Amino acid sequence: VLDVFTEERNSTIGASFVFKKIELNDQVIRLNLWDTAGQEKYYSLVPMYYRNTNCLILVYDITNKKSFMDVKDKWYKDLNKHLDLNSVVIGLIGNKSDMEDERQVTKKEALDFAKDKNLIFQEVSAKTNDNIDTFFSNIIEKTLEMFENNPELINTPFSIKNNSNQKSCCY
Image (tube, rainbow, N blue to C red; front, side, top):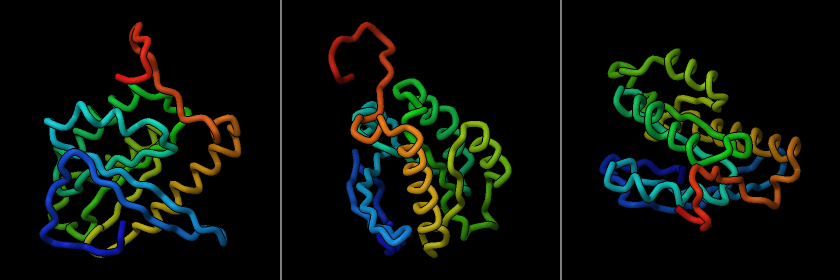
């Protein structure tokens, strides 16, 4: 995201926040990115980061089948449980495309899931910076398209499904 790769990167604890600027159609678009921890002990904290978002990105490691299954069977289902998926754009990234020899998740498998769920899909390499900007440009374009087709979403945070009789704003 920041055009810098560090081999010795520590896992996210809780969440981290960064800005990224992308130039698209002669406009500079500033993205506010939250990276939430994928570890089970932080799972209950993640829904609070869904609020006021326009797009979400699910990331799995192409060399780790379990990470892909977690995206499908846990993270996507959680989004579907808490959000109105018609008011947010969701992307799917298969990271480590530079490690083709260690691949455990086929591109077809991921693409089929993405098509079925209407996700923007791209395989990328954080290490080589391959396809990172392409992915961000694609998800920004899709988000802007969503706003053009649904102008009421521009000034309104996406809606959160109320799966209970809960009266408060938060869960």
